[in-house]
Image (cartoon, rainbow over all chains, first blue to last red):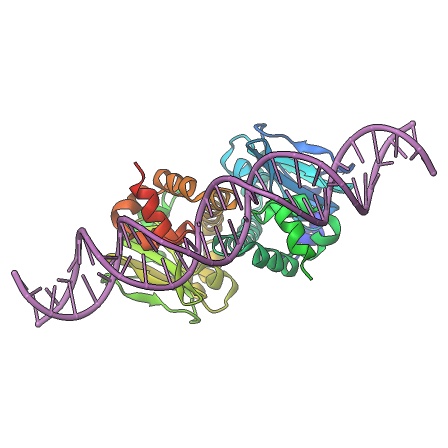
Length: 186
Length: 186
DNA sequence: GAAAGTTTTTGATAAATATCAAAAAACAAC
DNA sequence: GTTGTTTTTTGATATTTATCAAAAACTTTC
């Protein structure tokens, strides 16, 4: 799905706004396993995933901890860095061949100012991401390894086919050995 | 701090907007221990805390799990319910005598439409809350009980004086016995 | 300031999960 | 299709944290 089609879910996109968005965005095809943002690097780009799958992870004592997955029709960036203008604490990579539409932070700020109706899109999208993050946090706070996994199956079933066991395990805050044993039960 | 002063941090508030915000908000003094939103109740109000301390918690197997604390100059509501128009999964209470400025969801939606510049405030505030939530999640994902507590001391030191051990323990996802033992070390 | 209620601490034990190591399986590249 | 690489599984053990129970320390109320 194109970014214009996606944004049309939130407000009516005028022809003028559409051409402006097309002018400030670029779409690239990126092959699986490419790191698009590295740790401690400036992260002033937001990616709209036209097709494909990505993840953000960080290193904790040398071990990769997956912080998020994003699939087609979702946005991906180090939100922390993008919003605060600090360096990325995450490494962002494609897990499948992907088509990514990218917009720079400065272009987006310009867009907000020149097309104030886009502020609403920004607000609503941020609200939706907030809700999802909160749901995820509730699943970490006092749940057992098994409950976390069952909850993931419901909220992100596509990951079972598309992400590796190790990536999934660290996403739900458990080791891959534990997840393997959970899967082996019955 | 009044809500007008607080919002001035994000955009310039015109006299007209100021009087509009004052017209749609009401400020009440609420005594400590009052439940302002109950579990499974409609939550179409957002509270700006002029002074005081609040928390949101839910019941898991009969046990209270604190989901958030909010102090003076912060907003409090069941964001999930407020944004999605569903019922609150949280119980929201004052932990100290508090002055609360409240605005209804419908008034806020009106404000967004009639004063489009307020969309920006909504977006930026939501972004900031998102960042804080993400930081919190990172502290739950793979940290030990002790690390979580040390991290809390840095991010919310005021809680040590103002919230009980049990409330703090469930907020960081551990039992109060474990937190008591952590405090006793050294 | 005594009684009742609440919160915090302490102890003993159980349960869940991590860690380390190695084998097995799956996948990729030539 | 054989070789090398990565991912997943399995086993043995250690560690962390929860659970249950009771005592101690604080608070609140009359």
